[in-house]
Length: 375
Image 1 (tube, rainbow, N blue to C red):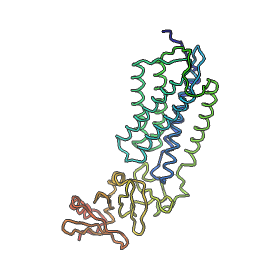
Image 2: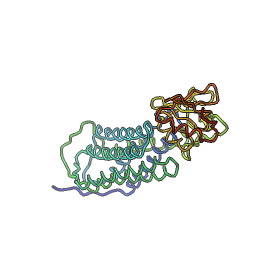
Image 3: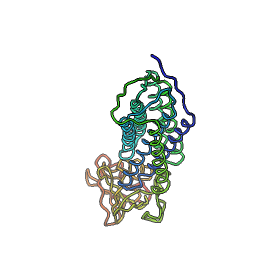
Image 4: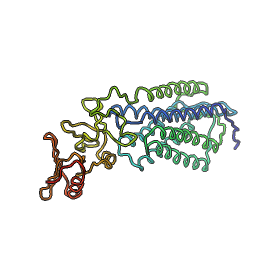
């Protein structure tokens, strides 16, 4: 079998790396501080980030393919090419949904990274299947190497981006993601041979290299420039539009540097409740309700996330559905095998304490500065 020789345009190779890095930065920035946003804003941000990351993977691939010089004319099947873009966006969306709408753990972070790695591989090989008049021939070594790099490097990128959400880690994760996308593509290409074929097996209309170049340039420019602008302006937290409770006005506290507020919603407005004003938190499905002395607020955090974030701030879980601020408990009442946390304001609810947590809750509340004691 006679294999075709090929070379690369180094300018387009460099441009493909830039696209991968920019799309990574855009996607990771769009998903920053989502716990402080409403549900609708979170869904919009995740959708936009999926388009940015998935579209960036697709754009990078086809910019690199435009830089691939073969001694024969090649075309692309439009249906398969479109399918490769949709697959990339869909797979990234699944990964981001896991990270932003379920409890985030080390396992889910690595899982999301591996899912995106799988998305890069699917996008690459589905996109390659759209080649016409030229057939790619793969090797086991190339498949194994590109797969290993995809899973490891994407897992690393998402671990860095999501283990601690701050600007420094987003920058580092962006570099990791860009290297991941480019490495997977070129490691796969270096271990791929090409042979000329005379018959076409297209599912849809054919796209020439020239037409593909126009599509890629327009999509890359519009998508990446638009999302970069949105990530740095429109979706960034706007302090002047945030209704705050208490005298601490920093809405980003607790997001990157340890929680000093709990992000909540009330009547469609974002409200950041200082921890000192919180009496108790009650589970409400996948979300929770935050109680202050006179009000009740909706919080997008599930009760497990509240427990994880606030445990070191004197908040204790007294029931599978309730967490209390031990410093605000007025007294602990125990009636045989039942217990209640009682607060000093008549409008606050009495919080039940489960039997298994009676002793621990009573000891924690009695020894916490600011509490009055047990009845």
